[in-house]
Amino acid sequence: MENAETPPTDIPPSGTPGIMQPRDATFWAQQGTNLRVSRAPDDAINLNVDGRRVASPLQGFGKMWQKTYRVRLEAAAVTPAEIIRAWKENFASFWPKGNHFYGPLTGIAPGEVALLNLKTGGMPLSTGVLVLYADDESFTLMTPEGHMFAGWITFSSFLEGNCPIVQAQVLMRASDPLYEIGLTLGGHKQEDNFWRYTLHGVARHFNADGPVTLQMICVDRRRQWAHARNIWHNAAVRTMLHTPARWLRRGRRNTAQPS
Amino acid sequence: MATQDQNVTVHVRYVSPTVSIIDIEGEVTAFAETVLTNAYTAASTNSTKTIILNFSGLEYMNSSGIGLLVTLLIRMNRHHQRLFAYGLNDHYRHIFELTRLNEAISVYETEADAINAA
Image 1 (cartoon, one colour):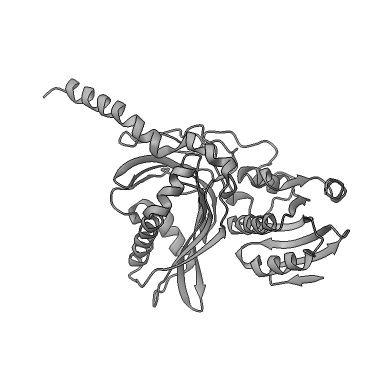
Image 2 (cartoon, chains in turn orange, purple; image 1 turned 60 degrees about the horizontal axis):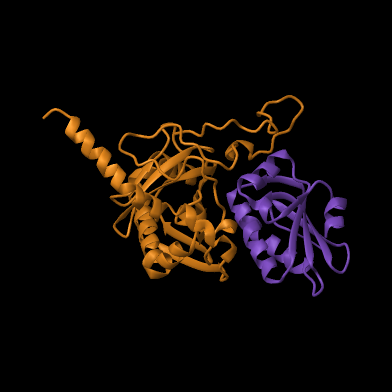
């Protein structure tokens, strides 16, 4: 599911004679802001990603939050790089049941686009993410228009003393007024449970576990009413509207199959 | 006024009562938070309307660094100040565009261009 857009020509490939590349050049996605899904598994709902622009917290609607989830891997003899490598390789398997991350076959790498099929409040939601940044000790996923939140989430690992720490840090706003209401009415709790489950999964992968701590900071209390129209792209609404057509197609497929 | 940590050094210059420049050299990552916050506090006087970030000496930036710029921008908006930038090479200019920071932070080629626009 790699991004099919051509890298911009103003960024020369590393190794171009006479041009010094910044050290972080290969860690960042190289395409433009529009996402492209080139291949989707048959069982995945592929909606609300193709052609959508990524959205930073500055393009969202609701209050801006920075939420940091952490777990300490006490007594685990593992380096941050080893943790991140395993997290990248097994990213989908750490998620709660019923939620699907259709990542690229090549693994989590800068510029790759993944489909997400989620269950929110019992309803299906199809959206995606762009791998914005990835190095040996961290990687960042950025959301497209229509996602529940506008922003990014950075997964990282580092040592505190000798103890490896696993961290997920979200910087986001609810994308539109509907999502903002949803976040207020239990959405934050649902998200917190999601990432707690995920971090416990990563910790258990290394035969370690402990309490997941959460630090939640309201970076900006203001809502950006100029972005209320983001509701047009709302992936939850669009997935729901698309559901009857999907059922119809599935029914036809079942009917056509010989018994 | 200059502050630094292991990997980043910042220097604050006062161009006029309303405009300050923060020169950034080195790495902008999560570890730059204190240094950048202190620089903003120093650069922001009672009369400051615009703060210009000089990225000519930027050597490395990760996604946490971009997050720092977002939170700095929010803080400045709260104080009705504007954030400008110059000195971005093609790579970092692309990152500003990809993360859509360029829609909120005005990016200029040179220091003179940024000061003229302030």
